[in-house]
Structures are given as structure tokens and as C-alpha cells.
Length: 583
Picture (tube, rainbow, N blue to C red):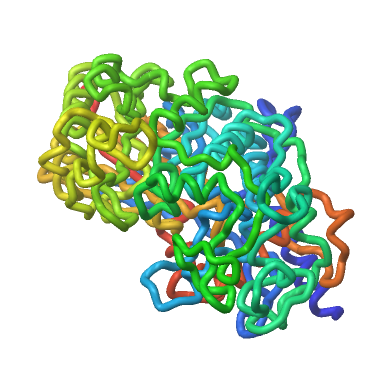
């Protein structure tokens, strides 16, 4: 015990020592919290059936000079061009929804993470990630003259919702903008033949609700594969309670992801899925565990409180829900080119804007609509041509360009045209799940097409993405030796639950530096002791539990080294050197 205390004290001292001392220009300012450069979080006993977490050593910043030399003295000369944050893959789940397919995780299908043990705590966890980014309203990196850049904006790189549901999108907007958030769903079961239970959790993580036990984590009575996991009585009901979301102190700009536009991120919406989503019958296979998407026999189903707010939304609905918030530019969608909006019948969800003079951000939509089932991405030809024209204009204007979207280049592999989803005029409906864009999507553009386009335009310095739920930084070299960086950042739902600060600097020596700094969310490392009643827990404590559960998740947790999202040292805290393409 004494040795443990000494190790913990040493870690705290190391964190404090690593925080830079304030100079004369900043000594009156509140010190910034520690980043992962100072300390990280790791499993205390990875070999155990269930591991708690502890403070770990920081991730040292790695300087990557693939495209330009790292000259001495650049830190004294550099000036900030744009400082912003990245949040990715909230996959904010209505975990009580009847259209979810949690039990796919228990069957021999190619799908994983259809259910997560921490998913009910998603709203509270994401709120703590947003709060942490919001604490860095000034950069942790000093520029010349001892100055620190102000946070300009935050981009979210797709999969904000988990299941294409309207209530999930509304929760996302509330988290980004701040205010009261009620994460519960379901209304009284009128017409469902059972008493209403809308105020409590109903779903697979309550063994009283399903026909078998031990196959999902029930924090009231962990059993089966989860017998060694902690007991937190009342946790699932506590997770449904309203709370005050902090919101970001700066504008946020949204990219569209496959979970925002496809059912469970993989399938087209249709009338059957829409009926399930707003209904009160959650299909289950015999035995109560394996999913059967359209089974409705009573013995193979779970009655849940219905909710019309669970309706599935397409791109137009998704953009409209963001426009209904308090951010004047609809979280970026107000910047959609009017000509593209008109030609696409209002379906275009890609846009560009210039947050700082000389810097342009380009948001792209990489969701593949034409595949029957799948999660990988592509670009339709009209959007690809718009990107090409946008980059040509930036080249002429001498702008530096950063693109952001959901799928990284390596995930742009889905070749089916959008028309595979059936045009909406054929279905005689304008709802989600059909192709509402009258333009021909062909030829579909994949990784090689976009990579070649970005290589052809020296104004492009980076493409920032999500989707893979892991930290990864990839150099893409041009024929002249210059290049751009592909940056993937881990998710807000799976271990290690990180976000990233990004800052583009002019080194004033013919080179640029793009800094990436990874953040843990704001909740304490230690979760409440097992057996603690959840009724009195704070949102901070709920987020701590979620992080610990995510580490132990058998499919996407940190204990499984083959799928952990932390990446390698050169993918985390980085300085990425570039040639300055400006004249």
C-alpha cells in the first residue's frame, strides 16, 4: 500500500513539474490543465478479469520531419495561423431504442461494437470531453513574443449519432451548444399492453428485462462473462437523468459520418426500420439474446417505452436539426455552396469557410449511400468536382487548406454508386434511406482519387478524420518531395476516449508545423468503489466509470492490444513539419 502511494505521489509531482511555468506575459492567467504530454491513463492490472485504471507516464511529443527539416530556433520565431480542436465519433446512442442490434455482438457476424458496456453513459462522457477541450481556450504552445493563440473553433469528424435517430442528433447539438440535456427516451406505453416505465432504463443491460442473463453487463447484478465487473446498483437508471451540458466556448463545425446517415452505421433506413424505431417492440431471437431485425413475436421481443423522437433522419433532417440550434451558421451547414444545394435538391452537406485570413477549412461528406450493408466510405463525383474547384481557388488565393471528414483515405473503399439506395422519387418518399440527390453519383471516387487530388494541390496541408477510433498520422508525399498529413483521432466512445488539439504554425523559415496534442476527458482517473449506489453519483463519476468500462470492453477496450485506439508514439502528440507552399 505504501509503495502504491509513493508511485501515485510521484506521478502527481511529475504532472505538476511538467506544466510550463508562467512567464511575465502569462503569469496572471489561469494555468492550463495537463495534456497527455504530461500524464496519461493506463490499466492498473491488464491481466485481471477486470482492471481498474491509474495515472501513467506522458506521451512525449514526436517531431516528424518527413517533408521539411526541423530547424533549430523555430520555436522562438513561429506564429500561430489557426488553433482549433477535434472531437470525433461520439456515437451517442439511444441505448433504449428498439432498432438497435446489440445482440449482433453475441453472434458470428462481421459486426463488432454493436453494443458497448459504457454506452448508456455516453452523454455524460462526451460532456466531459467537451469541457476538457473548452478549458484550452488558449493554446498550450507558445509562439514568438511569449504569446498563446486563442481557440478559434472545434471540428467534429462524424458519427456524432450512433443510429441515425433524431433524438441522438438533438442530444449532440445540446452537447455542443450547452444547456439542459435529458438523455432518457421513451414515453408511456400507450397501446403496448404493459404499464409505462418511461422513467427507468429498459434494455439489454437489465437482466430483469431480457430472457437470459450474463451475456451483457448488468451493473445491478454482474454475472456470466461479467461476473468480475463492478456492481453499481441503479447505474442504468441514474444514466437516464437530465443534466446541464457545458457546451463549447467556440463555434463547432460538423462533418457527416456513416452512423449519422445509416442505421447502426451500416444499413439503409426503410419503412420497417422507421416503424421499429418509433415503436415499442424490440426484436430479440428466441432465448432473448441474438438479434432478428424484424421478428415481432412476443416471446422473441422486449417491450420498451415507445418514442416518436426516435425517428430516423436523412441528410436534410440532420442539417435542419443543427440549423435549429443557437449557432448562427448551423454548425457549418450554412456555408454549403448555394449552387451545390440547388443542384442536389438540398442534399449537399459539404462546405468550406475561412476562419482566419489565409487558411481555409473544407468539410467533406464521405458516407457511402449505395451499399446494402457496410460502413466504409466514398465520394460521389459531384462532390469530388466541387472539392477540385475549391482547391483550385485556394491555390490561386494563396490559402493553406485543411480538409476534415469522417473516413480517412484508407477507408474510402466502397465502390457502389449512391443510386443503389433507390432514388427517392421511385420510392415516392423523401425520408431517409433513399437517394435524394438527382445528380448522377458516378464515377464513385475512392482513396486513390482523393489522394491524387490532394497531392495535386500544394495548398493542402492536412486531412483530419475519424472513423477508425484510433490515433494514426500518415504522411502523403508529392512527387516534388512536399506532402500533406493524414490525421486520424481516437473516438469519444471507445478506449482511450481522447480528443485532439491542432495548431498550424508558421515557423518563418520556409516551413510550417502542424501540432497535434491529445487530451483525456476531464473526469477523475479513479472510478467510484464497487458497490457504490449510483443514485448519488455526479456526472464526473459517471464519466469515470465509462472510461474504466471502455478499457475493459472485450471488443474495443485497451486490454485488447490488437484493437486499442492509442496508436503508436508517432501518432499521438506530434509536430508535423511541412514546406510552406505560399509564395
